[in-house]
Length: 212
Image (cartoon, rainbow, N blue to C red; front, side, top):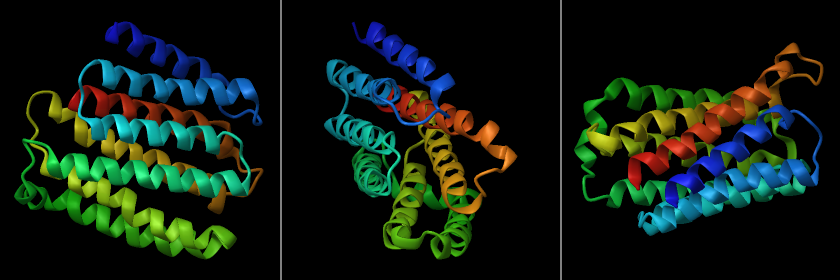
């Protein structure tokens, strides 16, 4: 049952991929939201930690909101994703295998994320307009997710958690670059929507595999 649901979620994600650059529509919202909501159902049925299910549900809500592509729903979507990242942070730190001393065993990743946050805030926040405060709050939260995942050992299925977190961060950075830094006619828009979706859904699937 759980395996079938996972592959239905993957099929929904694959169906969304070719329409990801298109304008908002009911079908687009359906595939985008279902692809992560079904991962949340899979987590429940597989007996995964409640925090994993909560994080996936919050991110599915964020997907539904962001798919509408208005400033109001974008702000609400940021809030949903921020809450999802906070759920992931608590999950990583409360996991039975978590050891916070491991965070500093990989200083290259730790300091790269800190520097990335400073650079992102410097470039994006001044260009975010009315969304400046939500963006400024969101940046340390998502990077906090990337830092706290370092508390999990690279053993067994848990080894997928770090790549998933880094893929999630990369997806959000590309999305922020699209929205705030690139002009509307930039040629990068021909491929960035596909990159965002592949990295993002892959990250959510990776977290499910690592932590369920």
